[in-house]
Amino acid sequence: MNDRFYSNEDLPNGEQKRRMWRALRRGTRRRRSLLMFVPDLPSFSYGIAASVIVYFLAVGVLSTVRSSIAGAQPDAVRLDQAYQLAIEQFERVVPRVVASRSASSGPSLEARQAELAQLNTAIAELRLATGEGDLSPLKQKRLRQLYGLKLQILQEMIENAEVEL
Amino acid sequence: MTDERELIGRAREGDERAFRELYDRHVDALYRFLKQYSDDSFCVEDWVQRAFIQAFQAIDSFRSSSKFSTWLFTIGLNEMRSDARRKNIVAFDSRELESWDGREEEQGDFLWVDAMKGWIRELDETKRSVFLLYEVEGYTHGEVGEMLGITESTSRALLCRAKQILRSKAQSQEKRE
Image (cartoon, rainbow over all chains, first blue to last red; front, side, top):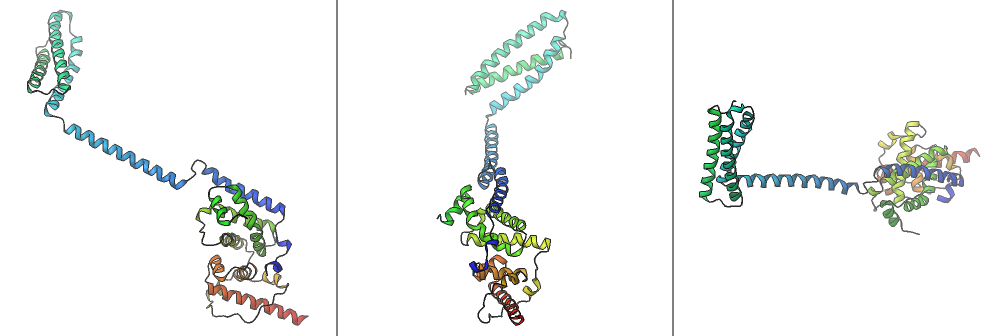
């Protein structure tokens, strides 16, 4: 039936076939060029999704570890950090005021500065020792005394008007 | 000759030579089939190339359980139908399809006469498609139903009705002669 029904007029000629093929190539190439850098779109999407999940997982794990490490710090270390913070707050104010003092108060200030320098050296040595893992009660006590002394000197300098606020 | 499944596999990987071979194998059959719906060769070319573009772009979704030609013809028919409806160049008769009970049986042998080729163009789109796909292209009623979105029994009944119309036209012509 097939051969009897169709005639040569029903078939496309060579030029028509070439024309259709050219149009077909243009039509399919446009889509392929859009996906040129993504040869396998589903795999690419899964990869992106997996990367995002791994990123957030890593951030979550790091945050948890960091907070658990911070929570596990011994009391001595946290006390040391508190003293450090308090001294830093004082020191932010005092040097500025010292710079504004008149020349007549020079010797007194120099003596204070020498005292503070000695304290700083002692504190730095002790902190170095405790930072290496030596948390003996005697060293901790000595460190707190030095902090206390330094705070006291800074406080006196402000209260006795050795510096002007 | 390369196995068609192998060709489709290569086409899925983007092998242009495989696309070309699939095109060469099926372009004549699709063109001459769609030519029965329009005398405008540019219009038919447009349906054919759009059918191939869609088929190649969706080659990943092609199920190997059916024939590539069945799938391609389905796409070609859909292209033709949407265009023909828009341009009103082919008659559609959906009312008859809805009221069909599928009980009609084929009556006697069908004798083909060459004049029938012109009368087929007077049939509405569904009857014409069923007749062409089953009688001329040699697809089964199951495949025709799959291509046209109708049941197998509806395909049988529509073929029967198409043949009745063609037969009566042939008888009228005989009487006139």
